[in-house]
Length: 430
Image (cartoon, rainbow, N blue to C red; front, top):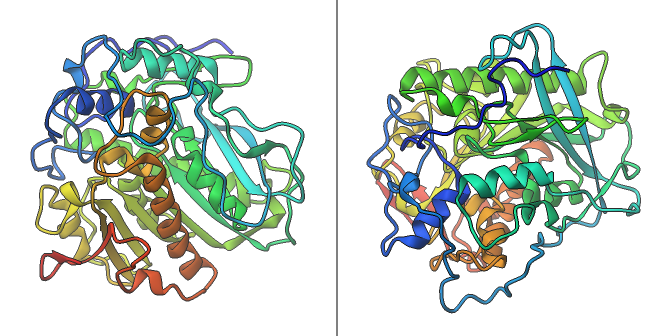
């Protein structure tokens, strides 16, 4: 297929404060003596949270790891093993929504998406899946101006999921979780979380939102880049558009997995009555508009994402959890959108913050850069951040999709003292 004009242009401009590029952001943090964050976000100006102020100022350099890092530096980063009893299988889907043009490239008359599926498998397969393509890795590392690291380094990350392994489960027995990454980030940035959920018996669908990611490779090797990055200014209407587009992407993926003509050969395993969603940054923020648009999504999690448009007065009655960094997302703090939306959440709800976490702590990025010797968050090690994210996200889904009681979500934990349960009305977390 011929790429529409302008679809693969490299984003040559600077990243605005409301944008978020994980690699560049971490380099900016490492290069700075202080962990600067963006000014207080508002729904009218920001679609992400915790963006460093110096993203565009990072020069072409390699930043050494912070002293005292316990993780060994390696040229081949790896993801931690899943905690569940099932081997993990994975496959990918190339989906095309012919009912709408692409929102960022109108010349493309259909919206194309790449989706990764992770699921419980009957047994390990012959080969594990690549983390991302070499071209996707090159685009991420290039954009971060990350020297001293091979362009394909991220594509060599060792994963735990086996390509096209035979799925395990009975018909209509497996709950489905949709994962949406941050703006500019690939679906692979949430792989450690996806693999863990799959090992516990979930089907997980990670969506690359085409032309919002720095790089999305399609079958045949065609790679699209971040056309949406070129839009300026990135004000309220831009982020509203991101929300509408991603909500439509998610609904289309659900149609493709649970509709009358599913695109995955094992889709009959999915229980369409037990569907939930989580995302990080813009991917977390879009969980709310998706749930408002699509009642199939029974529960949702926003991981450190400044939210978009306010929830209507009718409210959102399905279960919802905020999980964020303490520095940015404490009640009454720098990001006020969670305070605003909390009042409109009329069902089961929780507000959790993580001491020492950064915006990137809820993805694979901190861990992988730590392993490459590029950066270490002195407040929370990458492996610990992955462990915490996996445990609390799974607890939420186990409670609301599997109906398993989860005391972890009701009281402080001695196992995870970094986690604070917030009482927004009192503006306290403990």
